[in-house]
Image (cartoon, rainbow, N blue to C red; front, top):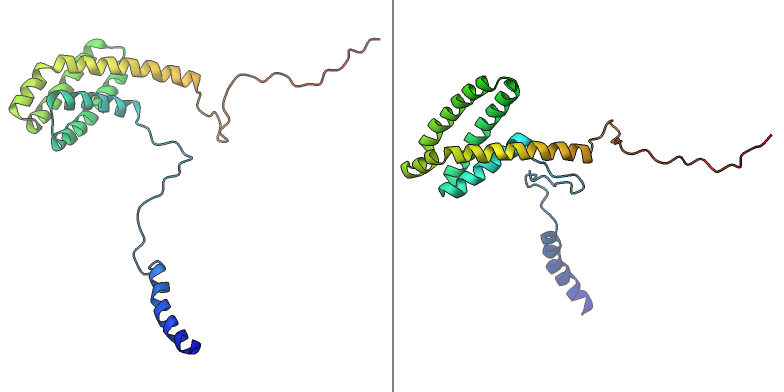
Length: 179
């Protein structure tokens, strides 16, 4: 009687074993596993500046997801251009002002295509305030970047050695030799 149940048990157990094994013929997954020991990618100062301005504008103008995505792309482009102009014309304020106005006009034209007439009117009325928000953020961000770079210096060499305070000398105390 024991021998009669053995083939039946094997017949029922075989599909269960195959069901637990992963499929080997399926396509490989493209999801990358993030190494949690590495720091997460951070925005560059220009990207952070554009993101801050965009977040303020999205909140104030009550934009939908499509408009917010377009606005973020426009602000990323224009903020990068403004940052390059600020570096290029750092010593010539008049030239910087003139070139900045051109970039702001480009932003206005692009936003006019994305925003509703009411939203664009609200944006146009608040342009000076948005420019001030951007300027304040850029000033505070550059100051905090400077402070952070001093407090947490980047590795000076490939072996991740950092420049820091010198360690006290660890020579053994020897009695002074008198002659």
